[in-house]
Amino acid sequence: MTGDLRFVAARVADGDVAAFREIVDRTRAPMYRLAARLTGDLGEAEDALQEAFVDAFRALREGRYDGRSKVETWLYRIVTNASLDALRRRREIAQDPSREPRFDGLVTAEARVALGELNTLLADLPPQERAALVLVAVEGLSAKEAASALGCSEGAVEQRLVRARAALRQKQQEVSRA
Image 1 (cartoon, one colour):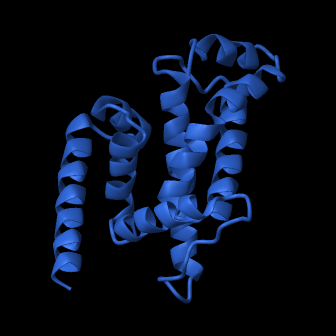
Image 2 (cartoon, rainbow, N blue to C red):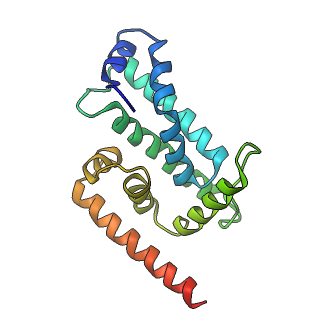
């Protein structure tokens, strides 16, 4: 993402509602990928992303973005929280916890296979470990940026990554033996 969105966020805070479209346009793709990887369901990811953007817009209008972090990092946190909330809601109402993710017709067969494999690997991780791994290993955030997005310390992110990677190695070994 080129350019600093802090100036655009300041315009939204000052009442320029149309400026929020620029934030959405410039961040939608990576935020959607994050939501899809965290929820494992493209429809749920779209819902979580929409909820996150509504929350972000309200926060900007109410002056709750302080500009200390990049807008993208701030949005990662909002999208992560919305996605984890969606996972919690799903767990509360799910009758079949191993249900397959839904895919819309616009997704290519290769993308379906890749996302399905990724979801299979990530499915058993606790939500906070899954979020840390996706933010750092998939989205390319630094541990410091992921900590800001997750609302925890950098050390907590590192610990979650260690646990997540160990769990994935163990799962890979189990699959190899089978």
